[in-house]
Length: 142
Image (cartoon, rainbow, N blue to C red; front, side):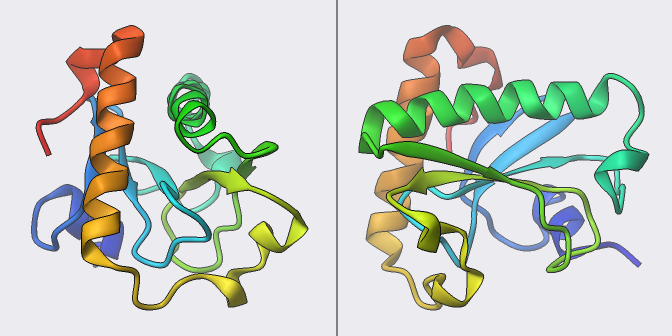
């Protein structure tokens, strides 16, 4: 059975995409821990990061770094968080989001009903930043 992330990747469930290439996608979390909270997800369904084929995990991390750089530039937090938890969905995903403190890692504080306009704006800002940084070939229109 396909994971919820596979359904998002396949367009069966809507997502706010900021990155798409042949190996991974990046889309905003529906329960963000902060503005611009992005999930980097392999197209291939892999449950645990240690089971990712050589090269795929490294590509996901390079993508997370590119997105994280934009998150830092746009929101200017003291840190950009990077986390692999893996309990929410059994499909490898890397969380990238701004962090102003350790509470930024507490999923119980994630937004449960984020403002759609703010989410659209965050996705737009990330796409624009990625395009400006030279990643335009991996940046979807929306």
